Amino acid sequence: MKESTFFDIWEFLLLPSALDICNTFKFADCEFMNNYKEVKTEYENLKKVIKNRMQKHPDKDKLMDRHKIAAAFAIAVAQSRQFKINRNKCDRLGAFIMDCTLAWNVSVNIIKGFTITEENENGSKDYAVLLEKKGFFYPETSNLGYEIQTIKALYWTIEKNSRYQYGERTGLFFLANIFYLIERYSKSKFIIETK
Image (cartoon, rainbow, N blue to C red):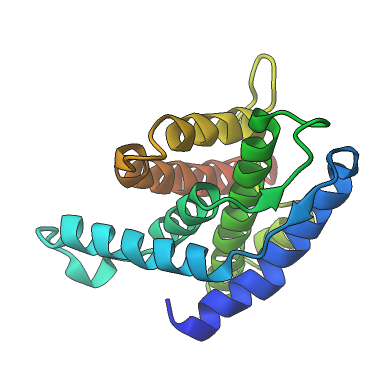
């Protein structure tokens, strides 16, 4: 990803989402730390991991698809502390969940942006408009919503291994696959519901 694109994602996707999270967690005296350089460095490191692991892939042109870009961005954001909170008003888990929520929101919006562009180019304007207005469809779950469960899973991936970073490095490909599956699930559900 070129610097301008990274900067655009930061400015137009991450910062508004961070502001929403701070407003939601006002009770915790939440403050966004604006760790742009830290996230950018971690993102670049994760890109190297992807490229190194994908070198043996027969289709080297597609090393960094949108799902891997979003996954690398998610892990870079979740791994770098994004919010300062009053520990007397919110526990440590709350701060990490805020980081992971921010990571999830931004990454899903990265996928959504790529998908809307592709769907418009392919002539599926109805689906592009639906994505623009409502976002992706998610699988139904028995208790907590799918997004909440996935954010918690992201938290557990990062938190358990934050000092050694093994979880993030291997979790990167799982997360990219989750983004792919969400994209496919959403498109399939749209096709079924519009028949």
